[in-house]
Structures are given as C-alpha cells and as structure tokens.
Length: 85
Image 1 (cartoon, one colour):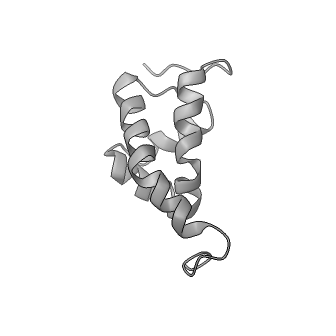
Image 2 (cartoon, one colour; image 1 turned 45 degrees about the horizontal axis):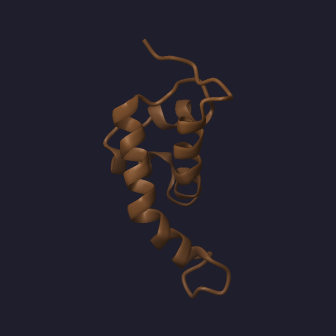
C-alpha cells in the first residue's frame, strides 16, 4: 500500500526536488522510463500523494547526480541548446 508523503519528509522532498527540472523539460514519462518505474508513479510522488521507497529514493538520487549536472549545463541561459524543443 502506498504511503502519503508528509511535508516534513525531507529525504523524499530533496530527492524529488532534484529531478523536478528533468520532469519539466523531459516530461514525467521520460523520467519514469529512466527510473524504470510506471509512468503514473512519478506524478504521484511529485504531488505528495505517495512517498518513494528506499530503492526509488536511491534511483532518484542516482538520476539527479548523473544527469542533473548535464541538464543544468545545457539548459542554462545563454546556452546554445537552451529553449530548444
């Protein structure tokens, strides 16, 4: 059974904050595919309806640490790729 995330759940909040930019630019289905989770799970985490388990928190952290810097580098203002779709 899924658990609802509490506002004070810092670990989940920090992990999800790390991938919100990826979700915004790539879409939740693409990020869900990278995490190897169902497409409807990520939106439930982002809205606080559910909390990722320990395995998924690790995946979120790994995704952010591996892809996050590339995403930040290629979407910053003035970058040739920024704003392209």
